[in-house]
Image 1 (cartoon, rainbow, N blue to C red):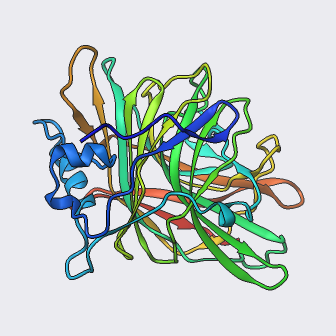
Image 2 (cartoon, rainbow, N blue to C red):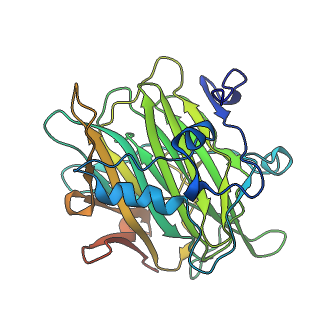
Amino acid sequence: MPPPPQDTPTPVGPGGEIAFYPLPPEYFDPSNASDEELRYFGLPLPMEFAGNPAAAAFRRAFLRPRPNAPPLRFLLGVDQLFADQLPGVVTLAAQASQPVQKSMNWSGGYVAPRGGRSLTSVMANWTVPVVSAPPGGTAPEYQSSTWIGLDGQKLYLDSSLPQIGTRQRWLTQPSARADYSSWFQWWARGRHVPQQDLALPVDPRDEISAIITVLDETTVRCNLKNASKSIILQAFNARAPAGLRISGATAEWIMERPSPLGSDGWEPYDLPAYTGLSFNNCLAESVSSGSAQLQQHDLEEARLIRMYEIAGNPMRTRTISTARRALGAPQGLELSYLAP
């Protein structure tokens, strides 16, 4: 079987691009596919080592439908007609203070490897939250993004951030309604790279599964699945914006309020009220220089971030979203909206 074509990348912003793998045929069963077939279609291999049993199990589960669910089907990655209807938004690095982990735009958790190791993957499941207008809210639009990503922490030089997830919006005009969708973005400091809308359908309370895997210092592979609908999105590779490379310094699981494209990041959209959100099976993997052995990282090592806003007269800060670790089996990162 020949390697997948990667010579016609699809632009997603200044200096960045994505290239889709071939779409698997109808009735293709990835749980029984050979490693060669999985590579051809860009699907995850277990890649099990002594140090990453949970991450290997996550990848195997990604290739199977839920119990008693219909067989998995595969969907083309981009619906351009739909994507062109949505306004541009941009992710910003966490506007965080140290050592207290608080941010104007991020809430969730992240891990950072030690001993010179570099992260090579991040993965998680989450249930799409139901969103609505906050009590007493008067904004014309509220937005939140729920995603996994690599790097992007504010203190790293030339940091960039490949990320994939779901968007939750509450619109008040012309009539009040919620809107849900999926997207990818490779954020880069100082560059306005908009989100690329993806075709995976998303409804509130759907279970989403996502994996980002580092292929080389400038390329990641993205896998996205709606487990509730038994749909896997066409896999794709994404390349870093020109001149940047992956550091593997952090892995994140985040609820964010993004900013309008072209803004300076200090005026993000207001956060919609959201139902309780939990990232489950939060895992990342790392390698040390000169070794192919993968070591997994979970929420035992995670640092938490809470989101705040500046409001009121006189001006004051108020926490609007918090995160806590649930370290039982399975582990979870539980996020909560705090009403005014």
